[in-house]
Image (tube, rainbow, N blue to C red; front, side, top):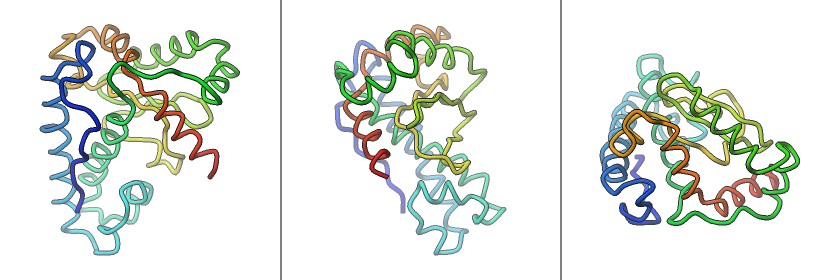
Length: 201
C-alpha cells in the first residue's frame, strides 16, 4: 500500500515563490489522487508485482498486467515524480557547493549556464511534463508523469514539475516566472545527497 509522503516543511514555507494554496492543492489533492489510483490499480496486479518498491515497479512496467499497466504508469509515475519533487525544495533554498557544483561547472562552464540550459528545457517542453537533472549532469524531459526510471535509467537527482497545476494559481500561464521563482527554493543539499548516493552505487 503506497502512502502520501509527509512534507519536510509546511505548506506556506515556500512562499512567496510557491504559495500555500498551490502547495496544499498540489500535495494534498493532486498527489493524493495519484496514490489512491495507484493503490486501486495494484489491487488487480499479482501480489509479487504489487509489493515491489515504487522505483522497481516503474522500471518493470512490462511485468504489470496490461489491463492496469497504463494506470500504474500514470499514477505510479505521478507518485514517484512528486515524491522526488517535494524533496528538491526547501524554504529559502540551500547553497550549491562541493562535488555537485564542481561537476555542473565542469559540464556547463558556469552555474548560470547550467540554469539557463535547464530553464530552456523547461520553457520549451510542450504541454505537461517534467525536466530532470540526471546523475551524469545531462538534462532530460518526460511527458505527462513519465520518468527516466521507466526506461531503465538511473533515478534523477533533481526534477521540476511543469504541469500547469504546479504554478497556474500563482503565475497563470507564464511558466518562465514560475521557473525563475523555483530556483529560489531548490534544496541543493538534498540534490547533492542524491548525487553522492548514486556515485556510491
